[in-house]
Image (tube, rainbow, N blue to C red):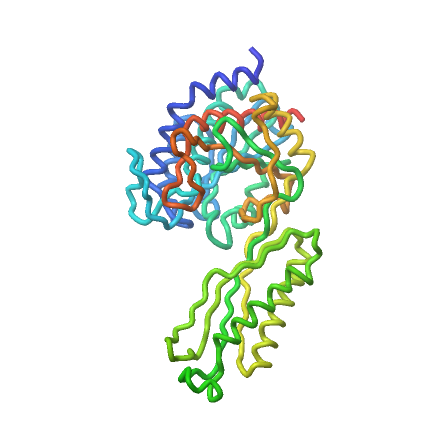
Length: 396
């Protein structure tokens, strides 16, 4: 039997166990930097499979290693994130979160379960490939500075050095049974903006005696949109959005300060740095010109994510061979952010999407929502394709 057929067969056999993994993790979610129980579960499963691993990497990270024949010939890494989100689950399912206020609403339970399933497959066929496969179970994708950056600093891509890394993420817009790839730029960088406009507040009926911090803020917000519309090259994806404004005045009270929270996203690191300088200059100088002051701070987040073209095209071809070209789609640029981007900045990386949608069953909710769920039939693809992509890349 060809290895690709053996992996397909084993993936089908793994489905009940992978679903069990996913449901256990879904019922016991843990927030970023708190994944102790999740890591312990992963370790117990790797022990049961006789897979050597290192624990407590960059916090609660776990890194396993599966050695095939000639293990030092080439090393490929597979990554899954493990953390959950501070969301109250609204789904009425047997595997509903048992921790009120915490939920796997971004599919990291499916990612971890899929990698455990892939590990079981790879461990059983390790005498049929050359090289080694690192299993990277990563904590804290959802919070800065991002578990990926910490794991890289801890040497996750070294000793042995990984030639490339492949990551998988659920996609509720894509039907179960399909996957998506995109070469080159794929996801945006993401920075958090905090702007505080200060002045002398007072009675709204006497604006001439006060500094209208609300009006100053409004003028700054409008002016800042020129960052994208006039300073940015139109061919460079770039987004500036503000999602929260706090002005604790009243019908007849102008507040002393207004606090604004926002996000800036792009796919060009040079432009990103330039935009930071321009935003701060515009906000501070405009506030000063109107008699107010402005503190403008930027919490620099994840870099943009680039899928190395040659690796990604090999992975796309391997996916087409594994599940048929009709089930492999081209992805659009996406202005969301992912800390997998850190890996893509230091080594060849491929981040692809696993379809989990099932409209007939009402499984259509977006990630980061209280009703997010997946069609668990997708987990057969989730574990089998990861295993096949790793083996295929070892032979590239």
